[in-house]
Length: 431
Image (cartoon, rainbow, N blue to C red; front, top):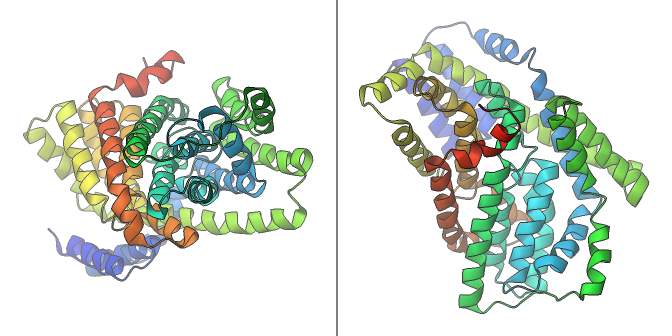
């Protein structure tokens, strides 16, 4: 390993131990690399600015963040909870099943696991604890697992980032996430059912059949958002970037005109919070470019490609090795870091082996989503612990059981690419 890479890794590890923000850690690592290799520090600005100029797809990120925050502000989560309870609440462990169903629907509007867990997740935790009597740690574990659906069901912010890195079609990625998202939801619900029987968890509220249409009608208006969003993309009416703007406008329209609970003051607060969250995401993206420059300059990607070629890995063998590595790294690294730093290293090998970029992208995003609920450093776990006032040790004790069914679903996606590529093929994105 060169002196420059040693400096980069050392600074990054020290920054991680000190719990500095990830973006700051990557900036510091990049500066350390440039300093040790005696390169112009001005390359920092050159690499970050030249890499981001012209990437119009980046505009979608803050707009999807804004959409998610508006949907949370206009009490969509509460309405969806009532609708979900009417459909699946009567099952054993019904509150857990409602949580999964609510997140499945919310994910088609937000594209972010953090937004889902902060909005729908907190509603679900409150209901599971107050109405279902669920242990706090178990309720948070269900909410954390269900939040993973946000980045899988389109629209998806991680998919936008992966499209930027790989050049894969964002439309194909959005379509490819649907079936894997449903598979993950089914695996979580299956585990909830098993645990509910073992712990004798209560059934949810039984809504009379005559009242079901009225309850579902309350959630009908929010469901127009994914219909407009995805329908417009698939019919070619607007691009994914334009769809993000349409989604934000539509969400605001629902709040201002239909529900009339989105005041101007509340909208300003939403805009302010969205700006803060978007800045964090954009800083992650920008800081990753300087780290990627160092990796490219050192020939790391080429060395990795040569190693895999020398060991004659098959497509499945490569996918298994890479995903096992990511699952292990996910216990200590943030999913965003792995997406922005490690994926570009692997892309040359992915292309050389003939692995479909859309399939690879969806699989690694599923992997990275598992990472953000993996102790000890899962981001979602910290968010839930802070918002729900539940000690981390209680959540960690319960979350490991959910990682197993999610890992099984991930294995199925690796072994059977058709699960991921079926819908894009149906719409003509994949031949």
